[in-house]
Length: 267
Image (tube, rainbow, N blue to C red):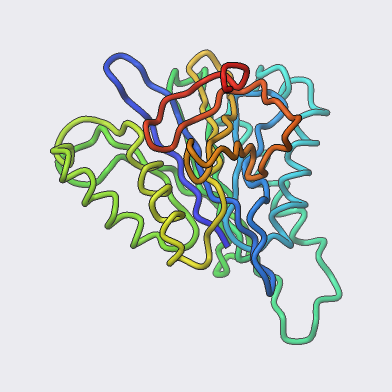
């Protein structure tokens, strides 16, 4: 299973949309190196998932293929707000093609997709959760909304396991820093995810965090991460520990300081 997040990071005049998740798949065992975030070929939209991988992986691959073969989607002539509807239609069409299920098993995907990116039409970041609604027997969507209460500067989308525990931990951290009533998020959601993964008490999530940033200049970029910390020495990308001879072109994130360094500068 999974926990997946998207939030707008605001630091002074800087705004960026960050998507993060864990790296664990569960299927009678635990596998902690599995990619869950995909940047669509147009490079300004990110998709990740939570739930049943029987549906998630084929659908995400078809999303990538659909964008790659459609000129207006690929060159961004169609905005993310239009792309979202196209992705929903792909989802719903694919679900109708499932057949020969075991007796008693319903074709009702327990899978949610988080779609996030930059809208050039609106001049703003946008994210949605695409989820299956059994009452209408199809996937539908709900947009991410601002933090409820007195502070409307915080926008967070979350789906998957341990949602309540995550929110409780996040509120506690924000209170400690005096940020619960004012200001936007910095890297607090990732700090909470990091701590939950390190605790090893949340069995449905695990492995290294996966992190991708989306920028206002309509580009998305993944980051490698030291895991479980910089001193331990392992560098993970998309959940997988890089081999000794591999070198990432992406920045490497320190999960404790939240600073980013170039892989080439690591001794």
